[in-house]
Length: 218
Image 1: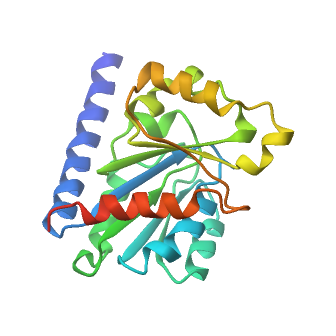
Image 2: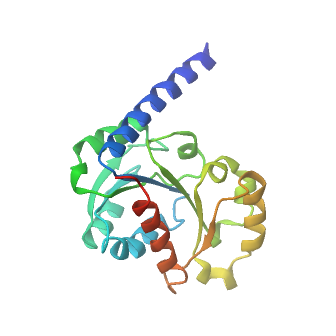
């Protein structure tokens, strides 16, 4: 009985996720889902790449968090439209939450919607929220074995971003080892090493997002 209930939960979630994806498709909007642990640097990545991306694309951000509007306030400061989604204890955003938020957006005036999911390597990876592109974010401070310990996120990711490379001298993190673990579950996913502090590969990351936006049929 418990297994059947779980299946029903996922079925409803997936149905709403597909409805959201269809809404985005009708307006030619790309949906991105950024997933990573608390403190991995998801918000900082958005702060770094969105100003560049906004030069050629119209962007909105949905900020998922358990509490506070701190991250949404940071995104608002760079001049990007943002909406806060507060889970009040939930460990991930559901398709229902994202669906209701997307319905409130003027999709006709957008090219991309970025969702920053709740800081968690585990739960958000199990739930489709209607995105087209899933981005895994892992920082040098977390350890290079995380793709082996939490494989689902890296298996389903379209891009893996290894952040905070400026901490390499202070962290026992081998990006080659991390990538080797990633390759055991996702052979072809691109892996990008970045640092918002030094600017390493941030332009390339912005261009990667821009390519995903420009390639969607409109």
